[in-house]
Image (cartoon, rainbow, N blue to C red; front, side, top):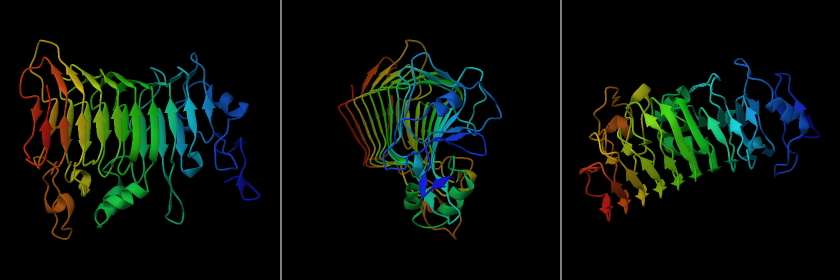
Length: 354
């Protein structure tokens, strides 16, 4: 840690070789030239992510080959505006463990979590993926699993995860892995006016266990998936998915379920009180698609169920999805035939869909 009189020094170079740019005051400020020079260095598969803790503005011709990270509270209220520039390259090494962009919490030596809040990423083309991480990168993370063996896991996961994040006017170009992954406990992310293209084995968007209150509005989903739905709502609650367009989602549109027991993690929260409203699903004439909207898609029918009488709560007590009290309203389906909404619970409100 580089300090001066108890405050962060802006533009300091760390011993690890990447630049830390963080302001002494509460609000972020523009980054120095030194950080821009680091951003524009050539790709290096061994280079660690470049930490961003100040406001960055790029140009439309900029191509940033290095992965970047917004880590901990020092990255709070930081804005990255690409102005049409590109993050990631077609030949860069990327994956779940090496994302193009990561927004992540940090655990201190005292066990407390330093959480980034209010980060904005806008007007960027992201080749690869963007991940948000708190207790762990996914529902199978070791700290996530340990927390899930205790009551109040949902509150702990949300307290440790990034929150109040704005992702605006982004162009996601998938390269095999999920282009946007919201890890366990991530809350209040807004994804607005963005596009999902390319091809991936998994989903376009994954909302992992214990996440909540995220909003997806006015986006275009035109990504090709090998076998998965476009948006997975896995034990995630109180989200709004509204006004989006899904182009030929033949492998599924929006599925609500609970991945009970995968990796030995107990899922506490159920996919409830979500609003799926005013979306358009457009299908090509050929083929028979999977449902556009499927509530209770798994309902305990998984190969990795975990039940233990020592943990009488969450999916350990009952592995069913419990996708209840959701609203599916005013969605439009063009082509694709009948049966594009599948629901097995009377508490869900299915109304006004065309």
